[in-house]
Image 1: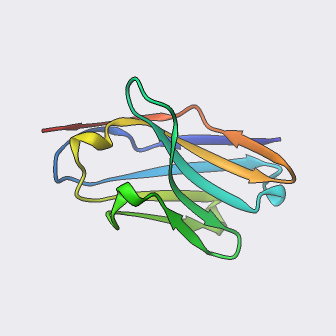
Image 2: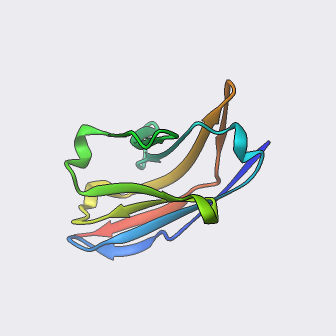
Length: 115
């Protein structure tokens, strides 16, 4: 089993930045892909960014190069640096870990961008 705990969400004005952090514990050796997803109010959960064990990245088109996913293997953490935030980025952001046919989720962290 893999446990994920997100942090770093909050309220920020449009144009500002936040960095989300996801701490992974448990059977982390089973993970071959980490990602960030978000669920805007009244909408379905959607992909934000993916990072594979081979350091390949993939971003949603809506991100438009404003976000960067990265990791610190020594700390078992994955980060999402979010810049030039827009009100439409408001959502609950979830960390995901996938591997060995399983998918694990954190509890989510709220990001609210005011106009």
